[in-house]
Image (cartoon, rainbow, N blue to C red; front, side, top):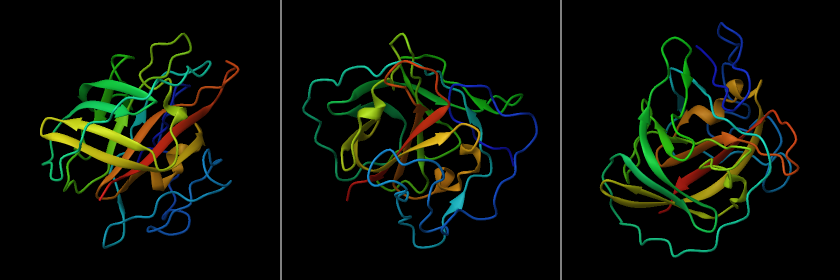
Length: 233
């Protein structure tokens, strides 16, 4: 099984990295490796809400996104759309995190069979991991959305680090709009994230946003930034 390294640095060395047999702390309440970026230090990742043990995807591609430089300013607040109570699974159209960012979908992408990399084609758009879940009220798998962060600006996920615990994430789809709530954000060293089982758990109603971490002073970094959210009831 290949490992996922999400971020903007050098891809992992050829060959599969070691993968632990279980997530730290168990399948239903995993504790991510790496420093916490919200809440108290070492705060756990969101607990699984599925009735049985969480499962992990058969493949873990390397999501190759760019990202160095300074954080952009926060956006002005906007009025989020009213979510539909029942939204059948369909493709992403638009992502909005009020006061933080807005991005249109670039579609679904699959790993390059030669490199096992997921590479968003455009820096200004959000992309979904095609082999995993599609957003919907009854989605049975985790939904993964990827975006670039760019030192010079123009990356759709440039402001992602401004997200806060409990904040709403609005996911517009072909069938309506869904609201998710941020449960946790984590920074992962690029050479360790491929071992973070909790990032790849299959959890109904979970949304995971993946990008690079941007240093506030513009200096070089080697961290990935991951947002965990859950569909609002």
